[in-house]
Length: 294
Image (tube, rainbow, N blue to C red; front, side, top):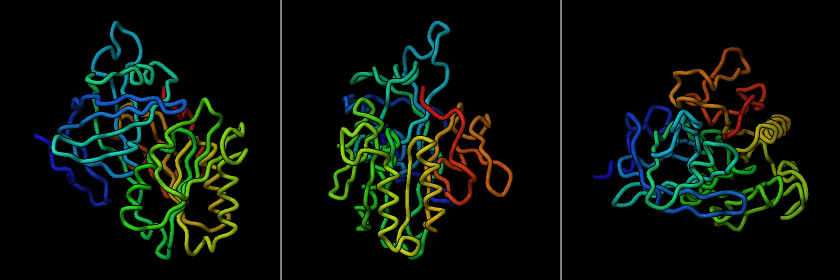
């Protein structure tokens, strides 16, 4: 029997994960540009919020015979829909190492072991900026994943948003079908789609044209260098922003301290429990060493 779709909610708005790891079944695996969209049915978990993540591992062949991968991999959820038989979850993968290779190769009916939803989600726009009249979503590569779910949530609430997505090249792109909106602008470093250059070029122009400090809130997810550029732009323009950061994670619930990063005022945060979504003004830099899915 499926658990309540809403689940238990913590004081900071995050949906709390059930204890332990559970099995879900893969229901779809489809290519999308250079990525894979992996969808599984979670019969016993709650509906996550945009920005939260799951620790994923294949049911079979994970670490078999003493080989890699050993640990589960952290992935933001790109889409989540509750139904009578459970919650349908979609993740965006890129086959870049032993862990992502195993996950990207799963077929319909295969078992996917997951723990989640974990971490702090994106905040409602007016919690970030009380004067917010609209949101700007900035995604780079597979960093578009949590923004796809956020865009859907904002649209359901009637909150206007504009989405800016950037890709390195055509071989490292995909997931656009998750964004069903008219305000979608693209950038690519090789010029295969939209603006030839960086997605932050589009953001800079947009912030110049808006009364940004008073009316905008920026949400971003992508590679560390892109997020650092977003953080610096928003700081320069006085625009409120939240960043979904990426870091190596071994456990996902704060025990291993593998994802610790420094705070602007001193001390550290653990991205898996204090993030992955953070206030851009709370950190000195978004350049997280060792970020990447393997």
